[in-house]
Image (cartoon, rainbow, N blue to C red; front, side):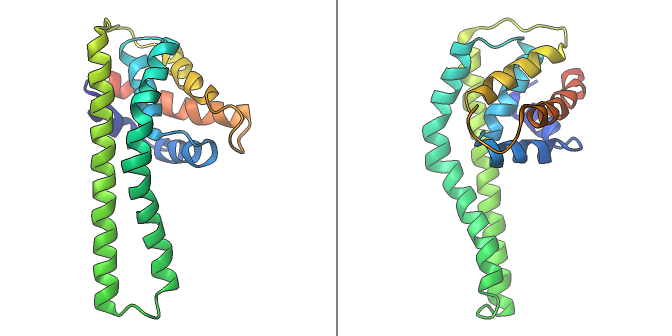
Length: 177
């Protein structure tokens, strides 16, 4: 299964979006890398540290230059619409919301492009796919990624494990697809 299709399938499972976004907001994780780690564990097994660091390296400039500014703008527009409500007419507010939705669509498209870049990176390594589904591999890869942010965030290890388990549990149906 392609990484982008896997990420969409898993992200749409109950509680996964909340788990991903909580980890992103509290620890500074990037959801595309987190889902990449899950996909890798699901289809290729345990990820070597060098592969994870390459994924982070490939992702950092793109995330900082493209995805995060779009996310910041979209969130700012949501908050600003409330504070500017007295200045925005019904037509202006509608245009404002339309623009915000367009930015959100571009943000999602940019994340899908990011996932394609990570998948291409993986294909260049010529890893062998593993047919057996092992939730331990998924958890191990995501934990390794979380450990790169060990001193960040407000979550304790138990909370992190709970959120990672929710994501990992959602991977089984995607593996069968």
